[in-house]
Picture (tube, rainbow, N blue to C red):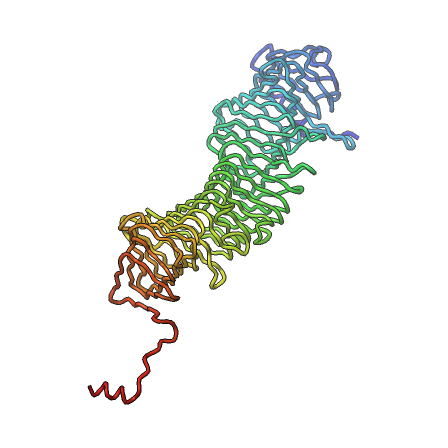
Length: 615
């Protein structure tokens, strides 16, 4: 049974009548394809007989015989108008087709399980352009089949929401109107790649005027040796893309959009993995602002963003799925939910402004959020699980990191430059069941730089095992570290005036170096300084007001001065304490242990004591 697209046929007949009545050129003719299959250059295949000429309007599919057939372009041709309907296909082969005016492709037929869309098939011939047209309208389930050739439109190219472009080749958009391409229908790139170039001033409307079909870059050969890619080169898109885009494993979407592009909240970016081949789905090109949701298909789907990237999306990653961000990334919110062994890697320069991340567990072995590149913190994030700062970090704006496990030094050696208020609230700030920081912390020079570590369990401590550079700003005393108790086993360089309000324990192996005579380290919490702590430099160790400092056996603060404005405890065990100079403020307290725990007085008789008093 044959089903004909009668609406397209009526449109073709009406257009025929109109053009015949108002044809501006006397020699112009209307040519109708009169058979099912055949060569364009055979005169008998046309009604009236004769191969179409430059001024002619050509209809393919408006006669009884011209249904679901195929026309082979065996000659180069120039015409004025081309209308393809009723399941017919015009195949350019090695010839060049030049339509000076409008081209229209519409309709399809179905016979049983076989579908015959009306199409133009653009093959790669010996010419720069294989199919050239003024305007091109593809509608009513028709299609453009790119088979390695180059299609050029000099006006508006319109694809309605039931039509399609598919295959591989090149489309050049030379239109100079406001819009060069309005895509509502399906766009599917083939394994040898599809390129769309804006070469005129007209922009690309990638999602058209209504929600359309998917942009599909997810095709591969059966032997998994070739994969689809789509490249769009343009100055700008007309607006935000709100259609869905799918990119398969090993496939590549390159959006070389000079002004950048965006996907809105109504869109979905889907990535998928081939069975047994978890190669990345690559997104390259201009800056992408992604407010769309993401979906992941297959096992171990891998989305790789090799472009400037600003996500504020919902991304539910399944087991072993992965997001990899290699370009400059600005995390501007969003919700990332990870299955077991899933991972989100920010490998390029990253700015963190907000977001919620939920990993499978708080164990780093079950999948993490990894900041592998240089990271700028400028907002608040929540990590319901595990995250790691692997690359160097700076704090530009006031930031809060709320996590179960937040490994601040990654694999070790991470350097933090803290120029604003940073609050880290976590169960651990290192690997699970550990809170040892082996990297570098710099808190100096700015008025706002401060680190507060709030460990969730009361009494928990974190260990400063790396390098701490600390100082004030403009000769002012600035609070730099607060929160949970800090144990110091590493090196502290005091560059100017700095205050620590957290309880602090200087352990065996720790060092304190004063950069100059005006450098001051003020401690206002409970401080315990081991006798093995090595001090150097001529600055001041200040037990500030409210502070409670204990100097252990053999403590030696070297060339520094000891200033006590709080409670100072000496002699907690037998031994000596050494200081270059000591100053006690009037409100301070000095607690000294004398003679051990059982002091003894000389034994005298009562009579002797009475005699001493009388004398």
